[in-house]
Every structure is written in structure tokens, then in C-alpha cells.
Length: 311
Image (cartoon, rainbow, N blue to C red):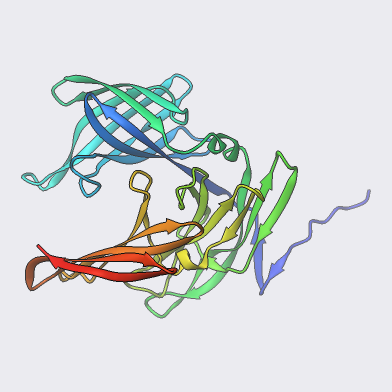
């Protein structure tokens, strides 16, 4: 009998291995609970029924988010919400949603508060219908085990990724993107699909981990989808900013920073074409109750400071 041997592929002395990549999709919805306008974002897990997310009432702003967690399936979605109670200094369950299955263009159903008062829910998805097609793509990371020095100065073995493999079933084509070699937070790879430039098409981001860092120990690699070429392209400009929060309602994204002593700030950016620009900054300092604001105007491809004030 002829023996068959499986070849082992080595990369820099480390074994490549077949391990799962978990793919999440962020969906953004805008609509109402009763007569109250809300903005909702929900993260779905491919091939799983678990969902997670958050929402906020438009009149209160995105700084007052309420967390969501639940399940979705063909029969509909059941979601619980939790909000922070400043008097009790803890999160508590404040309501539940009963909706049709997450992912469709429209979500309808009911919201019930802790006192069993019920309001109708009407939500419309912001992303275009390509989101449904993209969820059928095979998107995964090439992973391997590698040794890296951790924050304590010791060598430790981590799961690393050095290639993004994307198969487009409609075009029957597979493309690999490389040029990175990063540590993953878990023993598996993670990919998140989210519209980063607010053109209606989901883009892609990969959470990464910095073992040597004590603070700011993680970030994302960002890739922007081009609907004309049906391909993703690495965005080094976004990646250079690190952790970002994307608001599909305001069409802005935010970079936050804090030193743990009360010095905090938020920088807000907007897209113009294929470029993004700083449009305002909001900062607070440990020795002052005042909030400081800086506004910028986009001129000739640059963010120009035009106004500063404080409240």
C-alpha cells in the first residue's frame, strides 16, 4: 500500500496550523422605540445564534449607551438590555426586545421595560443589501504559533496571523492579503465586518494584541472594501490611529485617549471621498472642571483649526 504523508509547512521555524477564524458582522439600525428615536448597532456571529450590541436614544447622545445581549434565529430575536445605575453603581437589566430575525433590512417587534410596559419597535438597517452577500464569503486568517516577549519580559507562545484569505463565491476567486504579522487575543483568529467609511458597504477589521504593552495593549488592522473591484485594501492611515468607534448615524468616527488620572480626550473624524479628516476635539483635564473644544474646517485637503472654546 502506498503511504500518504501530509506536509508540514514551516514559517520562520513555527508550524502553520488550521484553526478557526470567528467572523462577526456589525449591523447598524436607525428608528424608534415608541416615539423615541434610537440608534442601534448589533454584532452577529457567523454560524452562531448569539448577538451582542448597544443602542442609545438620539436625544441623549452616543455617550449614554445601553448594552444588548441575546440570540437570533429564523423564528426571531430575543434580546435583553442592561444600563448602568449610578445610584447602585452597577449595571442592571432594564428591558427586553422581541424582534424578527436580526440581519434583515427592517426590524420590528416590541420593547418591554422592567415594569412590563411595552412599546413598538421600528428599525431600518443602514447598510445596503451587500451585507447579506458578504456574509456568504469565506474570510479567514492564516494562523501559526509564535514566541513573543510579554510585558513581564518572558517569552510566551501566542497565536499569530500573517495572512488574510478572502474567497468571493460570486466571482469564484480567492485573494490573499499579507504585509502584517500580529498576535491574536485568543488562540483563534477574529475578523469583524463593519462599514468604516459609511458608504453602505461593510469593510473589515482585525483585532490584534500587543503582549509587551501594559497599557494600550491592543489595536485593529483596518481594510476598506472597494465595490468596483470587489476587493479589500489595507488602510494604514486608519490602522495608525488604533482603537476607533464608528457612528453610522453621524457618519463620524472617534479616537479616544485617557491617562487614568482624569486627562481625557476625543478626536472626531469625517470622510471626504477616500480620505478622512479631523473635524473636532473635546478634552478634559484632571485639574479643571472645564471642557475644552477645538473645531476644524477641511480646506485644500487639510484640517485647519478654526475655533476653540470651553464650557
